[in-house]
Length: 381
Image (cartoon, rainbow, N blue to C red; front, side):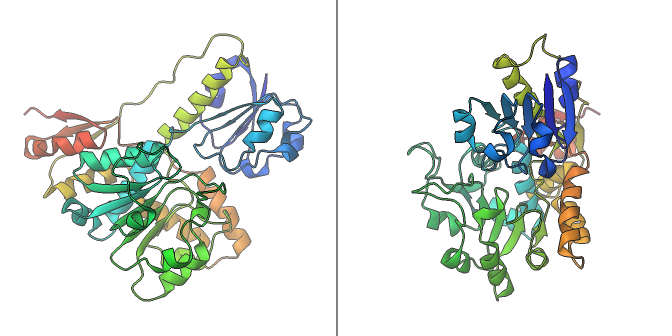
């Protein structure tokens, strides 16, 4: 079996074993000629998958290691008899930890939320619902808006206006143009203009959910909101002036933890096995290095949360990397560097699922550790 895979997907060769020959390519550069003789195509979010790419080829299976499928013409694949699978939910915790880190690193928003301020969540799918669960565990209030789900399936449901009036706004809808609830430019015009200085806006969904030109105009005006963007319109050619005006910016890597990428690959390989595309026995799971952190002292609940999140990841580090390769360079060069940041993204492990050792002095924060999805251990002295 012949497989073409995005170069940024981990462990494809290990999980397929000798059942397939794998060819790695940059996602944005995969062409019809590349897939002409292949049986399966495994992509991430940057490869448009449609008739122009696949019609007349031998491809029998397409898998995207992402939750979003706006880059895939799923209807055409169905008509062409090509099996399709996504990895919805695989990167949810990675994105949630990115959002929590962004909150913890921006001014005193974490303290405000712990004191009663509210998070507005737009989109209550895998990411939005997991974020809500984490917030609830931390004692942080939230409201959620998702007209794309069945009525009654959204916790603490509210209108879009109510969600956008919250102290922190987290955008997690899928990108869609479908009526009656298109999400493209969901934030534009008056909705962007209404954002104010005491708010924090975080977009870790798709860049096109926010009108970037309208957002830039708002951020250049007085009393602008704090803003964190992991996604941008027209990636990889992002607006340098917009990056200059956001609090933190990153290169579409919120879901780029090693854990999430590995889980996505595993799910796609399982889908290939389930549809009978792979012959031979399944490859056993990959060995995982134990992850352990320590919390030795904390002055407050907010301090404990910050320390734990920062032990695994900081948004500010990715922000510095993106600014270094984007500002004061030609747009074409910056676009190439945007993709290079994704291609050579450093190993990042998730906090959830790890073991956190508490000293007796910090044992009171065991509920915080558990709320972040970690296993709590108290050190015996």
